[in-house]
Length: 130
Picture (tube, rainbow, N blue to C red):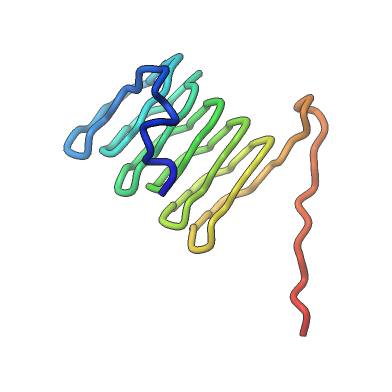
């Protein structure tokens, strides 16, 4: 899984909520955070949020980039969202770019916006040939 590679983040500090840890409250962070444990509250202003397999967030997430392999119960707003196969999301996702792997579970709505945030881009469904 590419999101686990440290090389992508060599130039910045990454905060970590480890697998056997939990955090309650609003996390206002200007850098990146990796969540392997549980966070009850929202994440605001983050550069990158990595929700590792087994990681849980109960609250809203706002960041430049969000990579989800764990579970979120709340809304996600980011310029770039990657929803990996093990992800489980209960909430709405608002983004400019999105990648969704097969197997991910999402119970919510998607809103894909254009570059100026006011230009909504429709998501087209590809019909399967019979």
